[in-house]
Length: 94
Image 1 (cartoon, one colour):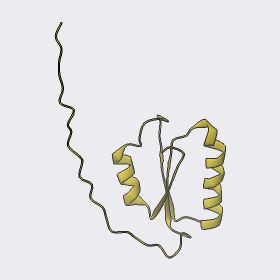
Image 2 (image 1 turned 180 degrees about the horizontal axis):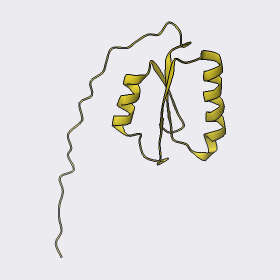
Image 3 (image 1 turned 90 degrees about the vertical axis):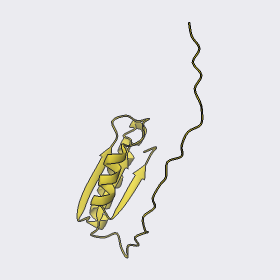
C-alpha cells in the first residue's frame, strides 16, 4: 500500500468579460432559457415561457435544459445560447 500526496494548489481560470449589451426593449428579441428541469419548478417554468411568448413575442427561442439537475450547464451549450440570443432567463439552480 502506498500513500500518494497531491499538491492542492490550482490555477485560477482567467475569464474574459464581454462588453455589456443594453436592450431598449425585450419585445421581439431572441430569448434564451437555461433551466435545470427540477420537478418542483416545472409548472412555473412552463407558465413563464408561455407568458414570455404571449407578452413579448420573441423573434427566436433557444433552450438549455439540463439533463442532470445538480450539474452545471455545459459551457459549450451556454456559449451557443449567448451567441444565439439577445437575452436569457436563468432559473432554479441552472
